[in-house]
Each structure stands twice: as C-alpha cells, then as structure tokens.
Amino acid sequence: MIIGLIGFGNVSKNLVKLIKSDDITFITSMEDRSPKTIDAIEKSKIKVLDTFKDVAVACDILISANSPKSALEAAENYGKFTKGIYLDLNNISPDTTFKINQHVENLVDGAIIGKIDSPNPYLYISGEKAEELLFLNGFLQTKKISDNVGDVAILKLLRSSYTKTLSAILIESTELSREYDLEEEFFDILSLTEGDNFREKSISRINNTLNNSKRKSEEIEEIINYFNKNNLSMVRAALKKLNQ
Image: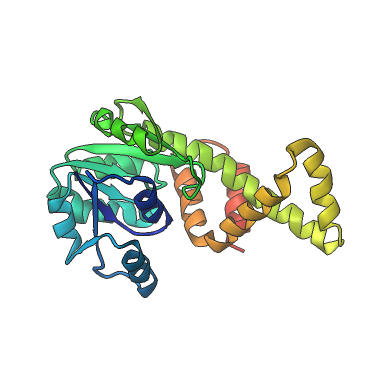
C-alpha cells in the first residue's frame, strides 16, 4: 500500500513514525516546499516524487494535512488525480469539507484527537469509505463516527472552540500571575484541583498556542464562520487575544 502526503508538518511527520509496516510505503514531494519542510522530509527518509500530482496519481490513500486556508486549494489541485481515498486531516469547517467533497471521489473526513507526537493519539473518521481505513487501528486508535462526510468536521470545530478558548484564558491568567510575581503559586493552587501535571500541561498548551498563533487564529475563524448564527462571545474573545 502507498500512502501519499500533502503537507509535511507535525501531523504527517508523526504519522510516518506511527504507521510502521513493511507493507506500507509513504511518498511525498518537495515541490514548492520551504527549506524547513524539505529538511524534515529528508530526515524522514520517505520516498520523494517530483510533484504532488505524481504523488496523488501513485498513492492508494492521499492524506492532506496542511493549514485550514490551504485545505481546499490542495483538494482542488490534487484531489482529482487520486483514485484512492482522500483523507483530509485539516481543522476546517463542514462547509469547507463539503466543498472538498466536490473535488475528490472518495473523501474521508478525519481528525487527530490528542497530541500527534504522543504514543497514543486517536484518529476519528467519517465518510462512506471510512471503513476501509480501520486497518490503521493497528497503528493508532481509529474510530469511525458515521458514513456522513462532515460529522468529524463538526466534532473538530466543537473541540477547537473549547480548547482554543481555554488556551486564551490560560495565557491571560498566566500573564496576570507574572505581573504580580505569583506565577508559581498560581499553578500550585490550580494543581490542587486540576492534577499534579497541570502546570506542565498548561505550559505546553501555552507554548503550542503562541508558537502556532497564525494557524490557531485560522482555526478559530473557521469556527466563527460556521457557527455564525450563534453567540460565540468567548470564542471571539479568544481570537482577539491570539491576534494581539
């Protein structure tokens, strides 16, 4: 089996590490990639083709793991060339997912739940062809939600609305504690109710959010655009905080 990768960030890089089998070959392209991405691809030692069109044609499963704003463009450019399953793992709205579905034959809507670089992340999938990806359960915990493309996209947005709002509040509270020279005590009292590892997890969450603020902002914009009829005051406040 050949798995093609569009995008080679943390998701793709760690999928290569997780899905180890003599029967599976990963392929990608360095076409129009940044020096940082090219370096990551070279270190992974996966097979490299000249173009992403070549990757799409050659693979049995094509995985798109980019940024929300490039997800549709990737599907438009390369989805039509693959006859296998197109697995979209981007944090996009159901509206974008449905648009992608117009450009690919066998779309499966997917989401990585949990830290992708952890030993046991979860993969949630939906779509008529999702059943064919349950073999991945041998490498990472994989759960099919339904046959409906878009169901996982909604779950992704709901989860993101919680985690990104929580991250913004955590960043703001931590900044206040530093202002009053009480950061250590602040995490100490929270750890009493939130658990012994709360400080470490919080610092990791804060750093991840700040280091990827542009992508996080794009994901929040997807939430606001899709749930535009709802009063998302906390989510909008989180977006404002990340854009400061």
